[in-house]
Image (cartoon, rainbow, N blue to C red):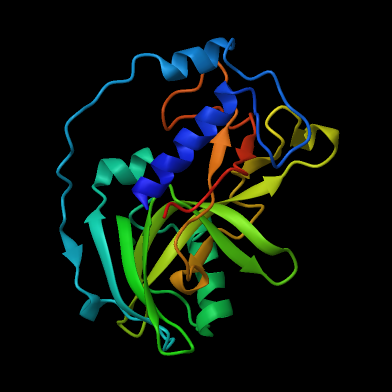
Length: 259
């Protein structure tokens, strides 16, 4: 997946440098090669050593899921307390907080669990791996990490996009532990300002208002590997992994599969 993402990024950069020259489109742009932000993006690249991540994990025997097509669930790299706080989450749910309310709705809608939630403790992780069994007895391994953009099928909206902000486990009243995603949704920018004519890409914005949208979902809603790529329309105050969310994201139309 990382190799495909690198190829995809290089293809997008090549398209920008070439002035968005692409045979699939009739209109051509002038490129971003004179843009100061783009120039700073391409400068000062260097190689660094590979980080050896902590591979501590929770065994799949300790994680439950009440559907037959998901199994062998493993969570890796448990968040420390400062990481939980840094990402604006809480290790113990407050009864009037958005995490508690969102989890209560998820249990009701997807598990038909209607009881009062006694256990307030949440355990967060960076990665989750699980196997999805298909109708034809084939299986696929799903690997999702915090920061990935996933596709979720909605009944009314069809395919929607969301960025994974947290992966966590919660133990319900039945003493069984279940895995969940906390996501922020991408919302399509409508009107004339919703389309970038230079990049010929649709614009989206991230919905960060937790009270406005449902954010917590069981992992069963994500049954395929991420294959969507968004590019942030950066401004001067954007930093790596800390973008100005008032600026839109562009849906990368130049994604392709490496063979």
